Image (cartoon, rainbow, N blue to C red; front, side, top):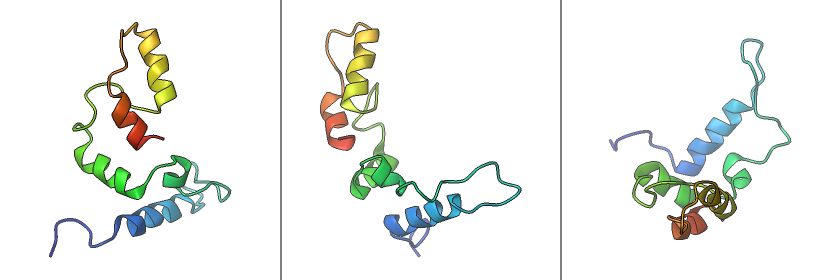
Length: 93
């Protein structure tokens, strides 16, 4: 038996997404039926999500996010360069 759930990543994310869309009285909120699945909203490839879930600290040593947000943060912090730019370009298009 492999470690973890015997699911493909896409199957697991669909299950989590489906569960989040269920409305119940004892639940504060839910994911709206009008919203796209989470990886589509994040504009992220499933293979990139899986890699980041396992090895997040490998490509990132500091700031993480879209290139636009990364550059904004570097301006605020007065960084002379933008660290992690290539990783952010790859994982957060």
